[in-house]
Image (cartoon, rainbow, N blue to C red):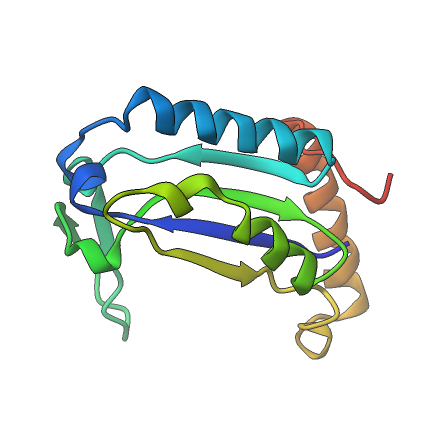
Amino acid sequence: MPRFILFIRADEDSESGKMPPREAIEAMTSFWKELVAANVLVYGDGMHASSKSTRIIFPGNGAPPELKPGPFPINEVVAGFWILEVKDYDEALMWAKKCPVINAPQGCTLELRPFITMEDAKDSFTDEMRKEHEEGSKLLDEKLGFKKNSE
């Protein structure tokens, strides 16, 4: 089954390091439990403010990477994410619409994006590369404890 990532875009509160109020955390916990009960949640977590991060910029042409410490503009930052494994985009969108951020007084923006699948990249992989990638992905999923809805 396809996987999707649902990003929670940062806002002034998340970038200031201010934790959400208890009611918001309770609502998010209920949503988390609903995702788990439906067997669609692969993983999810919140992120620290971008002031605690660094961007590694590769300028190209063999030049060494440049390090740019945060903070970064709010419109370029993610505050959290969920990885969902569902049957299709419509189901992922249905779950995104249930996210309790709808009640946030200042509003909130979510971004839903599908992961690239082997089928999407089939012309870029040889059979041997595809097999190695699938074996590596399986080992990583097992190591991280990610479940597969297809199992």
